[in-house]
Length: 194
Image 1 (cartoon, rainbow, N blue to C red):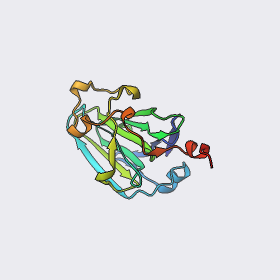
Image 2 (cartoon, one colour):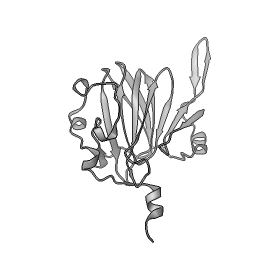
Image 3 (cartoon, rainbow, N blue to C red):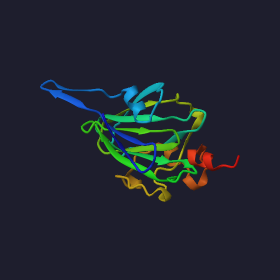
């Protein structure tokens, strides 16, 4: 696999190798040792798959708070999404900044999102299937989020707000300035007085 890094520390874009022949292709979609070699030594505990029927479906921006914070490895089985991860780590030099990438069944890219980030996506095509791994079980009492189109975040989405297909819960999420993030940056812990 090839791994690409961003200026927002911790997020990895993973490009698995596809081996093609006349039958189609084979790809290894997850390898714990290779991911650990890239600094993401994570034990995943749950896999999930979801289908969005309409283009312009927005999910997020979600996160789970400690002690059920989740690292996540996201890929698209079919269709395409714009996947976004927002740094929620207070004290981080990139707090509030985001990474945005297109993941599709064709490009086979995957995004590793560590704990401390809110995540969300918008579908670029109908009938888009997403598969992902998480490092902690989904725990409803610890689900939180930030409004997907919070102006402070400056995310350029591929869908207008009035055309987005959203759940009622996602449409009612707060702005980042209206919550206190439960995440702390490694930098802020190092700088705290003893």
